[in-house]
Image 1 (tube, rainbow, N blue to C red):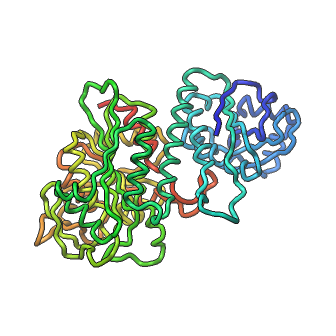
Image 2: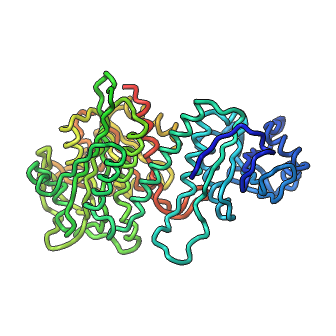
Length: 498
């Protein structure tokens, strides 16, 4: 999609549709200047629309006006932003996505989104671009018939009161972040037969080559030499070999604090549950069990272009968890790369096993701060539903820095407890630690398990099991993969303050 910015008068703009944000009428509040101007140009249409009661300005309310008088654009879309006092970057991002999806569904090839003061700052322009690019994405790549008539948009024009160098920089960053998030969504959307671990590794290698990143792939033999018994145990049941994908970004002039961010993403390209096999209902969605791995690869794609001052290394343990004659069994004991032993009580708790070895290896590579991203537990969905990412950390300062990045990125996250008492739920008579506890607090005990391998490094665990996939389409985003955490983690690296 081509992105342009302009400060031209709205009545001179020629595009398939002009989109205007309107808010709920509140007593004593005057409509923004641009809304008043368009109301005059259209002979009072906006005022009549409010008066009719058909449009109240609530979030994502819409009304479409054809052949509006006084405008060169053949359509005028007004879209509700809710209460003006509660409107921010996150709301604008969704609104832009909803406008893009609605208008391309009407056959538009281009649209202009008008941003009036005080919602015309550089960050608002960036959110408008991110939302449109994310909203333009579709998941029907493999359909050959009965496709939705939603051809990609050719152009988005962001209309501002003034265009500055700050706007240009913010919009360029917004484009990179949104396109990198869509890269992640592309990976997650791939069916497991077309994206086994080695193909995921090759896709990572291609991306790294295109954007000037270093990429290293550890194969089964090398991982066995190193002693990654937990990762290899999960991979044992599949005919598709595992891989540990390592992608490195090295700044030309690193920041002097010596920090090195390690991003570890769960890369289970398909999860049957292994011998502890899952129910058949909805198992097809387990192609998205590598969403965490795809997310950290998307982050690296963005950082290669945005060039933060801190080095960042992404690690993706990529495996397929299958039953079979060689598959690990409940009761097996594996020795991790750290030397600690794990009793495998449930082979469907495999993500934490592969992450344990990858986290240990990340520390060996010199990563001083760690973030892991994983569709780890159904328990986080019970706790937080499909709205917030679960955030666990052993370091309050690092956690708060990440949460500030998530707020700026418009990705909802919620801190969860990690008290020492929960460790009492992870006891094994036969090994150092079991891979599961009882049914209570499952998302927490999974994080406690990972903490055993993190040890003292500042660390955040992001459980995205409820947020990596949309069960139904939203007005602003297609059904399927969301690419969640890409924007947050990129902002974390870009805004690093030690």
